[in-house]
Image (cartoon, rainbow over all chains, first blue to last red; front, side, top):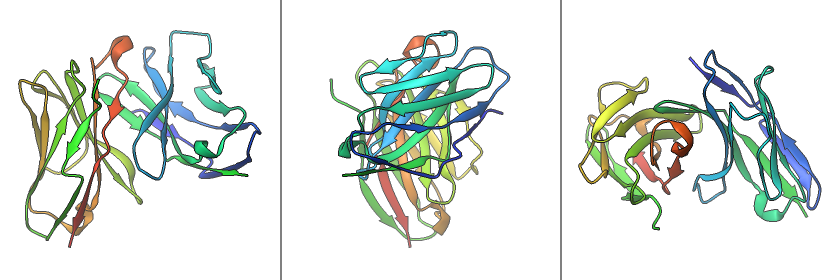
Amino acid sequence: AQTVTQSQPEMSVQEAETVTLSCTYDTSESDYYLFWYKQPPSRQMILVIRQEAYKQQNATENRFSVNFQKAAKSFSLKISDSQLGDAAMYFCAYRSSFRLTFGEGTQLTVNP
Amino acid sequence: KAGVTQTPRYLIKTRGQQVTLSCSPISGHRSVSWYQQTPGQGLQFLFEYFSETQRNKGNFPGRFSGRQFSNSRSEMNVSTLELGDSALYLCASSFSTSGVYNEQFFGPGTRLTVL
């Protein structure tokens, strides 16, 4: 079974600074997808970024980028120029057919 | 395009009752998944439907069931409610279950409280 681990239950960052959230996963599959989701206090789960395992190039979406290390099974999220609106719970997720497996989440606080 | 909608948004039930939650996916999406979110267990996969067929099921008791209709709308049912069923139930839809169109988009959730 696939597992996803986020070792940082809480992180904090100063506004305009950069923060990196860690995620590791375990799988024996070669074809899969990885995602970062954001869940603000409204509880609406929002897709932040996705990475296809077959792509070596790291995904980037505006201020959000990932560092995907397939051999190490590591998938970290970097948030640049942090904004107050980035404060939320962030979940790393692994997707194979028919199932999305989530990590435990990292609560990000952004300090003004 | 309208997003994923879930009804009702809030629900209060008592132990032993049953409940039905509804989810309408994004137009054109044929896959619907359900997740349970609790403070203690985090986000746990319940089941996924694609074209009216259950494709995968998580590790939940048989009291949890679901179905999908021909218009891709989905319902999940929980019978004989227990206090531990209190949770946020999230529905997500995707165009497909594999390949580049498998990213899931979530609804706002249904908050179920069992007294």
